[in-house]
Image 1: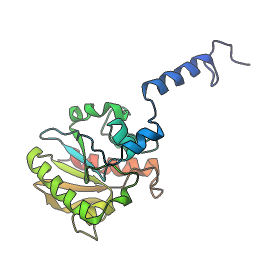
Image 2 (image 1 turned 30 degrees about the vertical axis):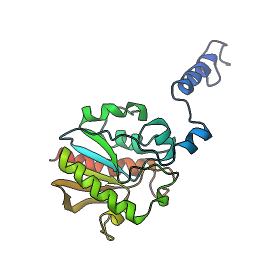
Image 3 (image 1 turned 90 degrees about the vertical axis):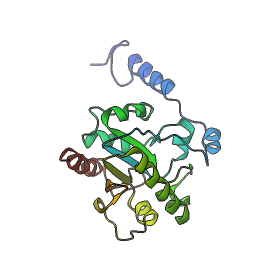
Amino acid sequence: MAASAGGSGPGSPARRRGRAAEVGRYPRPTREELAAAAERTIPDVIAPGLDVLFVGINPGLWSAATGWHFARPGNRFWPALHRGGFTPRLLHPSEQDELPGYGLGISNMVARASARADELTPAELVEGAEILTGKVERHRPRWVAVVGVTAYRIGFARPKAAFGPQPQRLAGARLWVLPNPSGLNAHFTPETLGAAFGELRAAVAAG
């Protein structure tokens, strides 16, 4: 039976209005805005004594244009955070300031935005690791989770590092390496990425 004109089927006016409202609430940056966002920086989401400080590689252009970490559609950080049990619901990137209330924060290895992480130089990652160490000394999170094993290997000169807990500490914080949640990382599905975040969540809960 066909849906009525005022029904709630996939093509119904109610559904179309909902999609339009969603687009209006989170407008997509224009091509010009994305281009202008290159080299920009965005503030960390950080507070003293967090349970986990997540550390991305560097902001993408979408994040730099919006001011939200892991903002590009298709990036799986926020779904993995929820699947892993860190947040009670799926947060939109615009809700990032709610994270400290859950004992969580976000920083980056390198502050400047670029279209791709592979545009960064090894020297930038090494310098970024030193800057990150200073942040950890000041804010004292219990755990630091670097989201990207290659950036971790280069920045901290640990070429054999693997995913999961690390034997070293960073300014007193325990270290964990997570997969890169970028949609370009085909080695991990949303399910396996969520499971990787869940392993960290279990370690944090265990103390």
